[in-house]
Image (cartoon, rainbow, N blue to C red; front, side, top):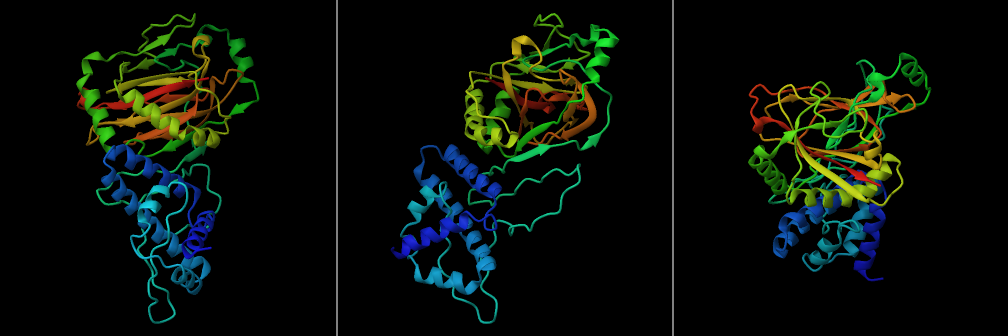
Amino acid sequence: MTAKQILDSFSETLMQDERILSPQERELLTSLLQNSRAVSGSDSGTQSAVTAAIARSVGETVAQRAFALLGSSIVEQIMARSFIPAGSDETTLAATVQLRAPQPPNPVPPAPGPKAPQPPNPFPPAPAPKAPQPPNTVPQPLKAPQPPNALHPQHGLRPLSVPVQQGGQRTHLDSGGSVGVLDSAETNSAETDSAEMDSPEIARAQCVVLDEFLAPQELDELVSYTLQHEEQFQCSEVISPNGEPGMIAFDHRRSRVLMDLGKHEAIILDRIRGVLPRVLDQLGIEEFPVRHTEAQITASNDGDFFRAHSDDSDEMIASRRITFVYFFHREPRQFEGGELRLHDSHGSLRRFSTGSYHTIVPQQNQIVFFPCSVLHEITPVECPSRAFADSRFTLNGWLHK
């Protein structure tokens, strides 16, 4: 083997060790590179420069953690024997960084004394194993390094399976969509409701959260497009208990929707396709062919809400499998509330909350995925200005099997 092949093999081996880079950090690296390609477009010079900067930064992190894990003397000897002049293979490295780890940096002469030299630290050191977390602990997103001309990187997958909060009364109302569903349980007998509530099966709420989902330019263009199309937003509708669509029921759902997303529908669906296999894996759902998609932009202003519902409870939308909700708003944020609550539920139709739920506070450029069968609600929005531009916006939709 050549010196370069030895170094490549060494780097690939290090990348498989979660003490060097965690799975979430590898996911982050892949997403960061995808964003760099999306923003730079056909400008190969910019793309190469950004990718090379990412490669150098991550290579330094790999080397630093290797120092701590293997001992400085071993790492230095391997790197010294495999030294490659700077710039000789940086282009190849940048092009392949998505498939394997970036190369460790060029060797650094050891400083006097017992300690090895410490390179810059763009990632935090690999965390030690944590003790089991209490139920109301939500995993924190991984923060990414900022390369030159910084693109905002994507975070790793954050699966959530809870209960984490207690509160609220049992609910069994509508089901969401470009239209929602008014649950016919409101007209059922008390005996029917009681029998369904006695069902012992509990469905635990699950979701996957991704931060910094779109590139900054894509986010800015989506906000501008939304504000320019204020006049095209229509009142949100629901499906009546007898299955008739087109019903407006302000006591169950209040918001406005835009069905024409322009180019932004293709952009968001392309990003979703890229992460869907990993999202399904985190949710424990087998991959399935996506036969149909729905997408809309929803504007929620002062007092708007959506009471607890699931997104597949009516026959006309029963083929829905995955719900996605992408949060965005104009900066600075001018609203509060509008939280997404995912409920643990029970009953044969999973219409009743157990009282345990997970709350997701809307964050700029964040997307949430969860099964359509999950009982969920949107809490009331508080927007003092009542200006459309200050609304809580989502680009939300559904993937059909």
